[in-house]
Image (cartoon, rainbow, N blue to C red):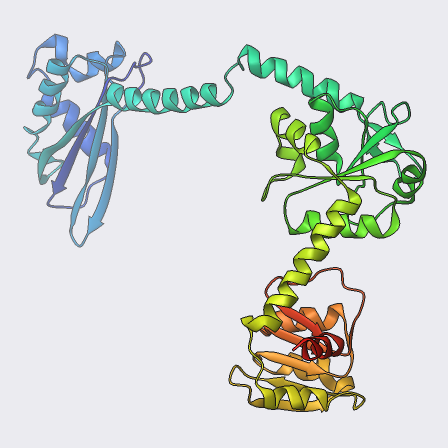
Length: 393
């Protein structure tokens, strides 16, 4: 049955049980017919539908055997009291067609309450979004402007187009850092005579610059920074070295930290001297007893000279395996661990890396090769070191 549009405030939900098989129109007819006149003209269902205060009645039925049951839903735009009266009137229905029937009210739902809940949830979402997209404060806006300007100050320099500051050509001194982020941080803090290497390999542009400029190498205060510095020292003419505080990267340093690091820079000769002293102390500590080598083992090690053989020991100085030096890398990959390695060959970076993986504490070889990364937890000696120590006794 049609009518004016309904502004729904409540939903009346009622269950219905019928002793026979009926159709939906039968139920709707029973509702209108058996409630007519019960509550007066003002609450007559037909009139309420015409005026748009009651919506279209929905009926769902399920047949089960020779009986039916289902649900009646009536949208209401009346107030609470009037809606409750309409709901109660449904329970007077006793028949649908020729069949006995019983109606019971299951619930009267407040549609506005559900709408209020949805509004509240949506308001929370919008508030969170507003917080995330809040207008930045003046300090943040200023920083964004400064960062944008500093980004523009980064130029591309040399054939490799390395990131650099605008004063790279005009300054007599150049600060060499690792990457673009380091360059930006130094420019941000007023150091515009800076250039980045753009990675761990040393570009030709840096090498060329080092021949005609005073170069300060400024590296991170970690193992990576140390390795990059060693590579740089091999190929470029570095004058001074500055190192970030332990565990910190140049790109994250504050102005105060940058200034302090550069003030504490040292000549490259002093840096190399300190580095060699540290290695010498490690080797001396070993010979003086940090790792005590039994005399019988010393004899075995001496006998290795000119044999091209290697011996792997456990922590009780028992021989794990004796092999040809040519087979050593393959054998080391297979063993779970070792305590010491003595061999008649060159101590290479590959041997050191394999030894570190196998928890080796001591390596003794014929001579030391070109090493980039010396593990701090491995003591390194050559046959010559052992002979010198014996002669000093």
